Image 1 (tube, rainbow, N blue to C red):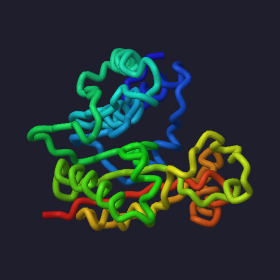
Image 2 (spheres, one colour; image 1 turned 90 degrees about the vertical axis):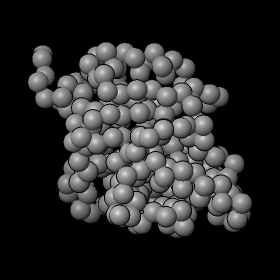
Image 3 (spheres, one colour; image 1 turned 135 degrees about the vertical axis):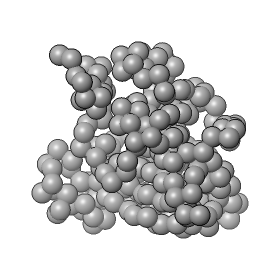
Image 4 (cartoon, helix red, strand yellow; image 1 turned 60 degrees about the vertical axis):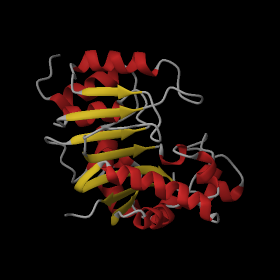
Length: 243
């Protein structure tokens, strides 16, 4: 079937490839955000699933930042190229350097995405972030770098698991997210404080609910208490102050 709608084509392509993102998940991440004409940076974007979503949603240009280093999935660059070809997305580029190495030149971004990647920017500092001043300074420097690459009023979208979870407290694997290394995770409230100290202003915190259950579950379960019994996954949005 030929899809004239770029978003419909996107979901058709990733479904054929057996990839995980659904319209409900992208709505959870990006509800209320317009990509039309935006410049986007996807940090730790893997093979570019969300990068290509942003392009299909109207972004002017997207950089997927994914260093193919230790711990990265094999074949990321190849999968990126296959997605780019399947989606005819010529405005998405892959940069295989770390955030610390990344130099955007004169580029300034309207939307920055960190999906499952904030804790990997500096894993050692992330583990000790709560009680160690040097670790906080390390992340403050990273957030100041990101903020310096964004336009005034730009948004940063962070999705990750919070460490407090029923299953972790019981000492058993979370059946919804069995492979999470909880010691490398922090709460959205701590991330918000660190980001505010780096010059961002708070926007909002949302909690993931069973997305397949739709709007009824969102009304009842999109809160911190319910998330404790589920994935403890949060969405944090911060903004660069307007000029």
